Amino acid sequence: MPILPLDHPEAPIAVMGTMLYPGTSEPDRAKARACAALIATRVARKLHDDGETVNEQGLLWTFTDGGLPLDDLETRWRDGTAVGQIFKAFFALYCTDPTLASWKSATKLATITAGLQGASGSRALLYKIREPLLSVAHLWAAWVIRGGRFQSKPEVGYQLDHDFQFFLNEAEGLRHWGQTWRPERSKAGPPLPPEVWHMPEGWSPPARQAGWPIGVGRIREMFIDEDLLARACLRGPGRPKKSA
Image (cartoon, rainbow, N blue to C red):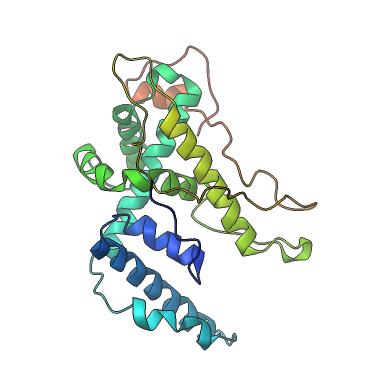
């Protein structure tokens, strides 16, 4: 399985580049690096505009990695978020009633939820974009579940890098579930394929300290309520569940 680029000078940005361009060929990896360089320069520009100090020496790598055209970046961000929503729905279906959990049902739920929120997206489109992003679906789901952001609490020593590491642990939990759980349906395989992006062997998140945010670092059970199951024409487990 491909290993996430945690040895990069800006690991969080490099991981995001991989999430947006998850292919393993050299052209794809070049685009992932270029994406990371673009994000880094945008962050540095904003810090400079806000009067913050920018370490120019630390940005030298952007000169070698940047420069490739990324005309599809906005589309890839949209598609990644959508796949994250679908995989989140898949996991919530599993928590609610494993017999209901499938990519088909999760896609149906995600389409209905998007419609309720005023967003567009057909099931045919969602099926089309899923395959190229399967290797990072767990990362996108973890990103969506945490609201698409990192947090810090400097007053208790909890930095953005700690939160990034816990995000990775959340994604690893989803990856483990996605590669090991199998539906009871005949010949059904796990939700995720064998080859997905993952953490290096021996990696572990930081030790939790007093005062750090509660709940980060792991994915809690989430459930689909009966009304949404009924709207999707899915047979519920027979008792109300807390909404995901």
